[in-house]
Image 1 (tube, helix red, strand yellow):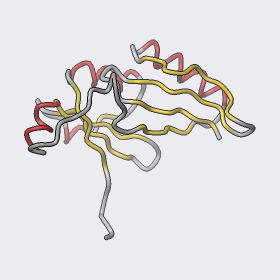
Image 2 (cartoon, one colour):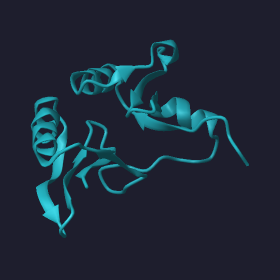
Image 3 (cartoon, rainbow, N blue to C red):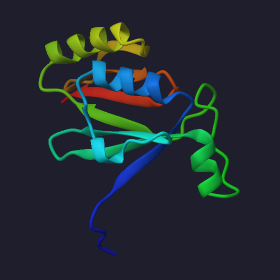
Length: 131
């Protein structure tokens, strides 16, 4: 297989809240892919796309595949790379300001890693790392 693209689809409860959260963090909306069923953003230099669908829309399209309760289980953990330890610390503050939840505070992991974990308002987890 050699797909043309890859992107992710995540379930959310509130599109306005999701749009506000990721916009406040500075992610670029993927305008043509926003509707009353989803909001979409570009992530990183290569513009990885994450679509945030209303949960009932995803569940109806995927038939018998229910989505997990992200407060109790992890569906996936994305990692966002930072350019410096200072940037990691700044992002942690920005995420808290935008109403994200810091799961683990910024800290060193071994000799070459510094980062933290956060959850967005729907519980989707992200690592932020400087390596």
